Amino acid sequence: MKFFIDTANLEQIKEAQSLGILDGVTTNPSLMAKEGITGKENILNHYKKICELVDGDVSAEVISTDFEGMVKEGEELAKLNPQIVIKLPMIADGIKACKYFSDKGIKTNVTLVFSAGQALLAAKAGATYVSPFLGRLDDISTDGLNLISEIRQIFDNYMFDTEILSASIRHTMHIIDCAKIGSDVVTSPLSAIKGLLNHPLTDIGLEKFLADYKKGN
Ligand code: G3P
Image (cartoon, rainbow, N blue to C red; front, top):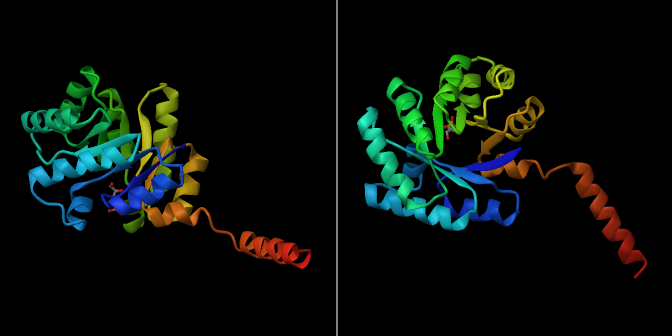
């Protein structure tokens, strides 16, 4: 399973990268705004900085909601770095743009996916990644994990190449649950990734090993 970090915060990206387990980065306009990155030029420069920090795919989201606008924006984003993946909203024009970019060999990530039908359409349009939003479904008392399972089954039935990129991950257990289902990728906040490190028995065990070592030295 690939690990992406879901942030535009450069320090957090560096920290995840330093663990040696990071496969890519996802961003969105809200995450950019959270870091105070506004204005087209600043946003494009920020994507370049992110690409310099990591080796893998970096999702950059378009703002346009019409096909022509998405194509123009996406082409500009794709020119920044070969690592850039064009993130497109799950609307009719987003699906058309997804087909356009996949035909050109440019990677895409169809975002804001909340149903298996939407994921199926994105896969048909040749999406590299499809992003079901787990946490936001949980927020409205709907079973987000069930959606990941449904998409897994559909993609396996037809051997779609599209990878399931589980997004809107809120905590460490979401990562474990996605791994159990067979999500190809999870994109998580740094806190959820670091939560995987923790177990009290590891801490107790290490403390004892070190104490025993000191006794003999
Ligand atoms: O990248 C999109 C997604 O991960 C958003 O997460 O926590 O805002 O629902 P959240």
